Image 1: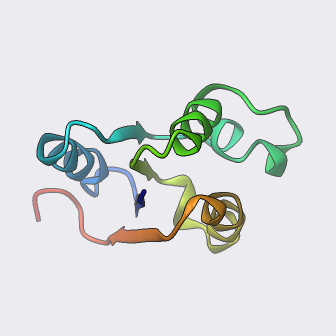
Image 2: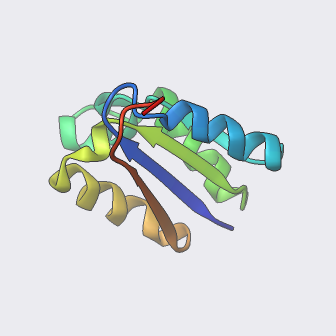
Length: 102
């Protein structure tokens, strides 16, 4: 199982890359633009819901996942996400720096 986290500012190409990865492997579970309340519920002191439940369900069933989000640009958020995700296997981080189309 693999977890791919695509991180970048708005309009940097996260969704485009996630879509390309999905076209290459339609068995991937793709989660795009996961907001903080959805992705790291413990960080915002609310129960797990929405995207995080779907991410967790996919990971528990050994499904390869792509998570594309701006939220993980922050190093502290990235550390919290890593602590939640690493239990499911290694995480591949992809950082996009340029604006899409440059």
